[in-house]
Amino acid sequence: MMRKGARNLITDVPGLLVGNAEDVRLKSGVTAVLCDPPATAAVQVLGGAPGTRETDLLAPHNTVQAVDAIVLSGGSAFGLDAASGVQAALREMGRGFAVGPHRVPIVPAAILFDLANGGDKDWGRYAPYRDLGYQAARAVSADFGTGSTGAGTGALTATFKGGLGSASTVLSNGITVGALVAVNAIGS
Image 1: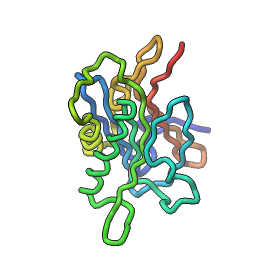
Image 2: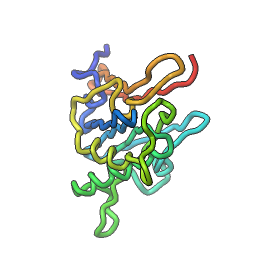
Image 3: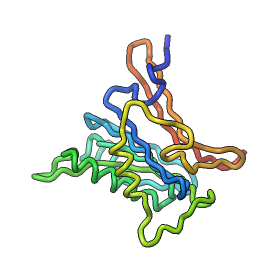
């Protein structure tokens, strides 16, 4: 028998916290999942135009065995910079993969396309996603918003508003399984 987690959010999984940051003028945002302790992760990249960062290191034959955070962001390829902001926050916390005397926070990221949603994308030389990533990492909590927040802020589908969603379930053996998704589908 399965039942919903206490919050019915991915943060029902022990060690996970989620933070959101958004810019309403931009109509875009970032969601950061922080893992404490670092967590084993895997990825399957699908779609005709995927945008990812550091997902190749998740292959089982590579050196890194765990991630410090995972980032979902709007902004298309510009949004990949959100992982740099999350890395900065984690570095300030003393987190990361030890490389000699240095710590390198491991932060894979994936983006969605929300550039054509009517938001003000005239940001100047640098896109704001690094700062949004930093804000999201600093705002982590077990309770977080879903819908039009974080990475879901500017998400659209062909006929409906997209957004950020999460759920959890507790299996009969006591293991909690959680999910987090930013939906930005095309088609009806």
